[in-house]
Image 1: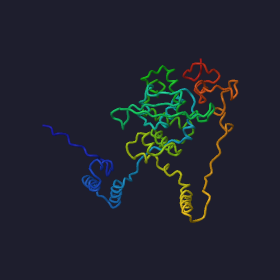
Image 2: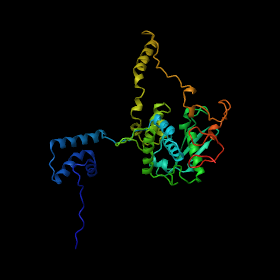
Image 3: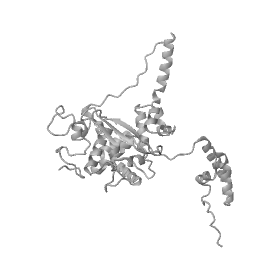
Image 4: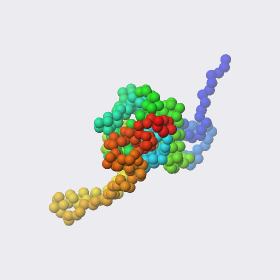
Amino acid sequence: MPSPPRRQRPKSRGDPSTALKLVQNRRSLEKAISTYNRDQGHVMDSATEAAVRRARLACKRNLGPPTRMRGISLAELRLLASKLTGFYAKQRVAGYLMASWFLLRCSEALSMDMQHIRFDEGSKTVSVTIASSKVDQAAEGCVRRHGCLCTSNSDRNASICPYHVLWHLCLTRKLQRACPGSAVLANERGNRFLKKEFLECFRRDARESGIVVGPNCTLGTHSFRRGGVQLLALGGAASRDQLKLFGRWSSDCIDNYLEETLIADSPSYAARAVGSVQGQAVRAGVGPVSVPHQLPRPAPASSEDLPAAEGRPAASGLSRSQAPKNRWLTVPVSGWFRQDRPQGHVTRKGHSH
C-alpha cells in the first residue's frame, strides 16, 4: 500500500513571509524562526539573531518596510495630457485622469461601464458610479462627483478637467459603438483592459511623455489613487475626513497615502505659532503689537503666458470675444478633433469626415 505523500516544507532559509505564516502572533515569531532554521540544519549566528529581533520589533511597532507606488503629480498629469496624441492615447489619458480625480483603484477603473458615467450640463458636473470594490463586497455601489475646472473657453485646465475629459472619452467610445454595458476603458482591439496591459500602456505613455521610468519603477496603477488624494489634500480641496469618505477608505490607512502632504505647509508653522502667541498677548493687554506675517503669493498667470493650443481659441476666423461659449463641446482644445472641421465625424486616426 503506497504511503501518503509527505508535506513539502518551504526551502527558503529564514524567509520572513514563511515565518509569518508559521506563527499566529508576533510574540512567537522569534521562536518560530529559530525552530524553523534548526529543523533545516542551520545554525543561527549573531547577525541572524539580531535580524530576527529587528523583525520582531518591526512587527510590534508596525515599522515593516512597505513597498508602495509613488503618487503621480499634477505636473505629470499635465505632461501626459499635452504630450500624448492620437485617438487611443487620448482615451488612455482620460482614464488616467479619471482614476486620479475620483481616487479609483485600478480594478474599479477598469470595471467601469459606460452606464456608470452621467453628465449634468446645467451644473457642469460629472457623476461616476463605483458599482463594487474590495471595500464594497455587497456591491451596494456609491456615486462620486466632480465639477468643471474651466473658467473660460481657453482655460489651460481644460486638458485635465474631469468634466470635459470624461465627456470626450464617452463621446469617442460612442463613436466606437459602445453600448451602456461596454467598458469605458478599452484597448485598441475594443476589449476591456486587463490590469497588466493597462500598467504596461501607462508606463510606456509615461516614458514617451518624458516622465522618468527606471528599472525599479514605483510608478504603477495605484499611483493614480495615491497621487489624486495627495493633490486634493495639498491644494486644500477637502479635509482629511472628507477625503477619507470620498476615497472610500474604511480605516486610517489614508494617512499612508497622504504621507508628507500632511505637513506640506510646515514652512509657515513658526510664523503661525509666533503670530498666535503674540495675538493672545495683545488680547490680554500685554506685549507689543506686531504685524502678522504674510506669506508671498505668486501672481496669477495671464492668458498671454499660456500655450498657444490652450491659451487661444481655435483658428476659425473668430476673435476671442466672438468664440461660441459652448466651444468646448464642439472643438476641445486637447486635440480630440481637428479644429478646421468641427462638425465632422471622428475616426480612429483623429480625422473628420
